[in-house]
Length: 322
Image 1 (cartoon, rainbow, N blue to C red):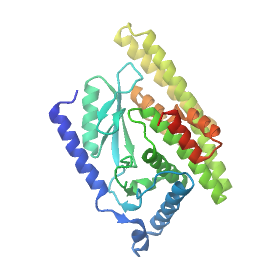
Image 2 (tube, rainbow, N blue to C red):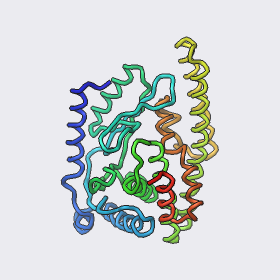
Image 3 (cartoon, rainbow, N blue to C red):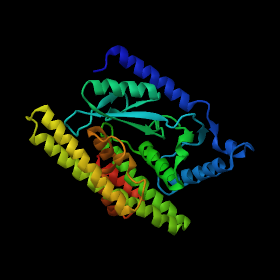
Image 4 (cartoon, one colour):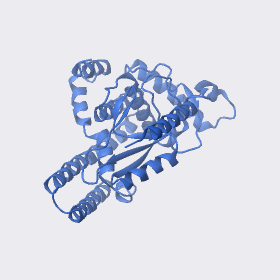
């Protein structure tokens, strides 16, 4: 449990961290026009201008002034995100926040604070997963900054991240982490495909769709794993802790072998490296589920909306009674 003092410290750090990200930004066009700006960064910023326009005019997303100003960060992430689950449960710990309500993660602007908090939770017996978030969203309360951390991957990944965050800005269901993240994931993926189709980039579209098929294969594996592990914990809850630990260890070793088989099937040497080469625990399994497990549901709704973004967003709001 957080004490009042530690809570005050956390929110104080959050205010300072937010201000550090949202002040000292430079309009994108000004960065592009600067002769000292690197050629690749100029290209990426011009792409962001294109993507913002597409998001507003074709995806019906609430863009506003979000991601219209650029800020360079001398660090690999905008925010470090802590996820936690009990030692023998696949259900994530939740934290309460102003405005957004309950959320199944805790974000930090300082890596050292995230690591300290992770260590504290581990000391209390939780499984912990510490992830990095390259994007930052205030859910429409402020004009979100375009950070240098956005540009670590392909153009398709950049488009997906941007559309994902703008989806949060457009529609956010308070207190339901899996709904929000799976919805934003699904809509962003549809948005990227529409964008590539409009550009006539059929080869890139096929490559991206191949990537999505792999993600869906992994989603099925992840869903089965979460269900099976949940049943193991439920059916053996009265067993000695040593026995539970052994079964848990055996389960995750088996899960890693399944991931390795997927890598071989895909003929990709670096696929799923975070699941094969790094520690996997309840928290990591559950955290990834947030973004993936409800994607098929939102994909089905996309079909019901005749693959029209405006109709789709209206359908989502209608189903949630908004």
